[in-house]
Image 1: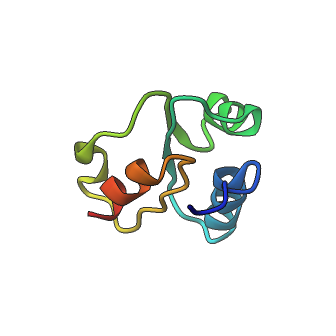
Image 2 (image 1 turned 90 degrees about the horizontal axis):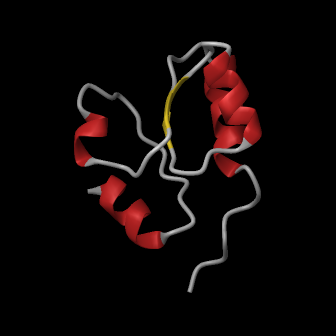
Length: 77
């Protein structure tokens, strides 16, 4: 069994992507407070729900950071 992701792993990746001037969309049923604030400030797009395969249409990069390995595997496909 894989270890659980570090707290706010997604938030750290988002910070890295924003530094690289990427356009970022986060899909998460329970986002961190930091991610919520970034979405409220229109810095990122935030979809606060479960992942759907269609979320990746048009994406150039996807980073799976779910605590559920099955969700990460679904994103990988």
